[in-house]
Length: 364
Image 1 (cartoon, rainbow, N blue to C red):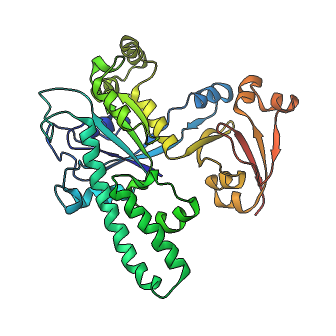
Image 2 (cartoon, one colour; image 1 turned 135 degrees about the vertical axis):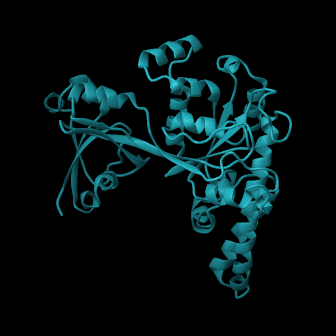
Image 3 (tube, rainbow, N blue to C red; image 1 turned 180 degrees about the vertical axis):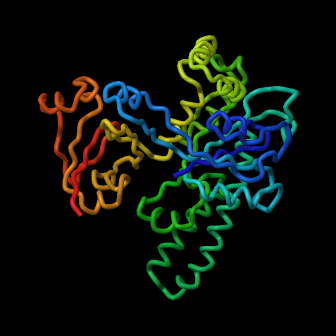
């Protein structure tokens, strides 16, 4: 599962990517600085992992990770091949979610590809290009379906109806992620097309230092514009995050954050928000050799969670010994958890909860 950072050229995508990753993507004040997408596997900040480490004192600790891709900037006409359009659209199609960076600061020293700062206009530019590409995919598909539908095939007729609704929806300047259709029809007829505007989106308003803890008119306009989308929004200052990223000493970082009135870096909030955007959650295994955070889809069953460790665990699943995170922290040891009757034995139908500490029993 991976998320792609998108936006117009020069809105701060690569600067933000640098803050999230040890990979130093090139960053400069000119359009199309990023040509090939930069990939990075990024650790997910999780205080629970540190708390478990303090109790268990394992030989090593392994955090959960998420893959983030920095994709080249898009311009008007991308759907027709302008700029790096086709390459951009192909790269974004391969991601599972979109982190859409919007420039929400004024600075005459940093050029804007359209000559002025207007994040709502910028959002619409990208939306239109993605919608046009999805229309191309839908129209190509409906041409093929029409041939079968003419024979009276019921499934083809149903698919044609769904495709027509999707086309009309996009032509009304909407994104497929907001379409009101039965989930069965979406899964059967639309999801196989990998439509770009069906992907979940997180908007990141890139502001200046003065706007971190105060009102910003650009941000307010974005909030108002996306209010009906049901999408989340994060505010951060990529320039400040870059400065924080350069500090190696923890105490120096802490003092810097305190001076800014921040509890944690905005980049940490963004990573966690991206993890949530991808519909992911964490469970833990804890022992003297290793404390590890494992990534699973929300609503995953115990066997599916076991399969993340090894496919044999899922195939031969017998049961799961489960301890709630808060119980583990309160009682400090597995033995005391058992004594208090707080360890549960769960079967194949158990839906794993975020933060569960689990030991699997299996037989292959």
